[in-house]
View (tube, rainbow, N blue to C red):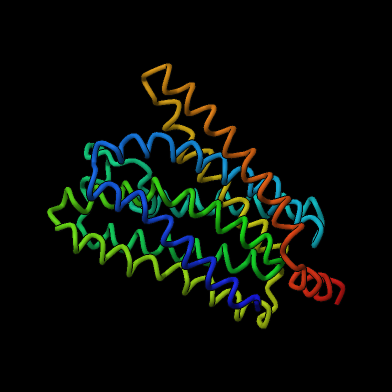
Length: 266
């Protein structure tokens, strides 16, 4: 199977998986709240594992360690500024008293679409280096999107949209992930973007989301029992994604990695 087919199949599968939480909310609201409580810390663990155990090591192999870490830091700050400027960028919890209650439907949809597009750019950048890295990145993003979609579905329902419209809007918005992945994978190499730069930037993005946008929700958990469960789930997320990264690198062909190394030597 060509890298293109692997990329498209992975993005579509990840997008469908990410919608599970929102769909569950549509037909079982109480259950969705419990799913969200587990999915949020698992997503944080998945993102941290993908960043520290896969993306950054790959970026260091392709570039200079100090430069890679600097770019990751720039990426973290960049996405912090982006989220501060666009307060509708992330919705990791379905809280109607949250600041996002002031948003209208169009801003919620635009924010979700932009978020999905940036996720696609991250996936495409990872596939440029190695399909194995791309698959791990896709899995981490899908895990992160499950609680994200629960929040988005809940906000749109709270704004008065019917279930069918909410589902349709989110399905269309999810296609932005594929668009972003195809664009960066198809043209990233042609315009000379450094794979090391892209991976480091993506790692900064993942670290920012996990550290500032998801982990605080665990700290805010008022019940000690649930806080302990969520901490355990976060660690499980790190272990599983770290293990999956090792398996992926053993099983998936490394043609793209060889190509990236060739470009690096040039």
